[in-house]
Image 1: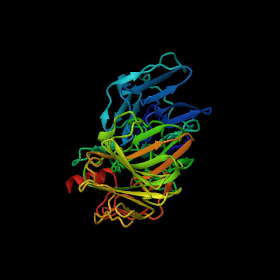
Image 2: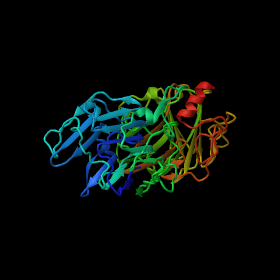
Image 3: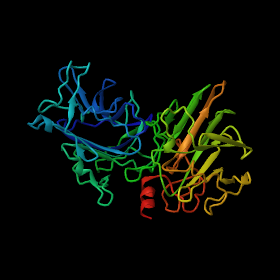
Image 4: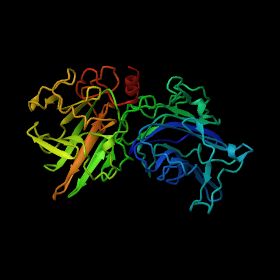
Amino acid sequence: MASAYLSRTPSSAGNRKTWTWSGWVKLFKGNSQLILFSEQTNSYPTGGLYINGQQEIRLYFGTASNSFQCAVDTDAKYRDVSGWYHIVCAVDTTQVTDSDRVKFYVNGVLQTELNGLTSSGAGSSDPLYPSQNYDCLINTANVHYIGGDNNYSADCSMTHVHFIDGTQYQASNFGETDSTTGIWKPKTAPSVTYGTNGFFLKFENSGAFGTDSSGNSNNFTVNGTMTQTIDTPSNVFNVLNAVSNPPNGYTLSNGNLEATVSGSSFVRTFITNTIAPTSGKWYWESKLITSGGTDRSSIGICSYDENIGTGTTIPQNELSICTGFSRIRFTENGSTTEVDSFYTVPSANDIFMYALDLDNTKFYFGVNGNWWNYNSSETGGDPTSGSGYVTNSTNIIKGAMSAFLRVQAGAVSTTFTNQFNFGNGYFGTTAVSSAQNPDDGIGIFEYDVPTGYRALCTKSINAEEYD
């Protein structure tokens, strides 16, 4: 929901002492201010649940005479961009025991270590818990927001967002442990009583993301542009890793599926996957937005063993395809070979295809629906039959594998932008036009997926393990 949010103004106040918020959240960045749910008075948020820039889950309310701000243990940092968090904040200020008045759950687990925080707002030191029978600044008749507000925009995905007016529920009301995988998963139809201002947002209707499925018709207004994704808590797709190695000058956007770097006289390398397979056959695509001209900007594959941490040193073993030249680059044991006239020089909006066969140690590359045959420098590669691969080097293909981006800029400033589709069906915010699926039906791509290849997602990874 980056640069977009939902808003609704209740017709009347509900129960301000007792309520529950539950939602599944996938972060795009590990250091952004993320409004999960907030109330606003006089054009400024005065209370709400959020993840702050230090990756802490916090609940805050402030008035001129009374305020509190509590957080899940501030040693805990919620910065994982590879999976989904299930967050539950359950409030009941009528409770006699102060620690029962606010309860946080993360992925089904009650967080028993909370921290009180000072603020520079209403009070010099906020208490950890609200006083008994405190009226929270949630569930008033003022405007409420999800995913951001008119001051802050979130950078995340959300699904199965519930608000309960009048009951303090536990996480087990909204989620459960899968008996096979042991993973915490959503209950798609939880047995809860929503109350007057309660709602349930599934985000399943791309034309009406604010539709309330609780039966209350407490629909929200969509502000900005939202994109629907098939990445869910039950099936997580690979993205570019915003918190590894580190990004080294790359700007990630659009759900960590777009990478941009600009400037001159630098080397930027970036090993990207949040899912790095060690076996199986995998397919993904990228779209060239800006190539960096004739500078050496390239995309390919690299083992995680080659992630040496600096992000500015070329790995000892990698294979990459230049976007400004007709050139493929092999680096093995520190020795680099560059082969020109390998394919037509790419243009903006060209789509690159990648097929990685880890079972047979082969990698294939194509552009705009045509697979290239390295042996003849022409089309005719065939990942399905196993012919025409670009490399079968055991120096390059080894261990856990990832996509690989590299830019070596010259004296002239360059911009290098690529968008990736690992099966989610989008290049940035633009949906693929032809909607091709792998054999197992999981994933959406622009071009036909070779037989036997899968999208990089948790369901396909799990299926590969049990084949």
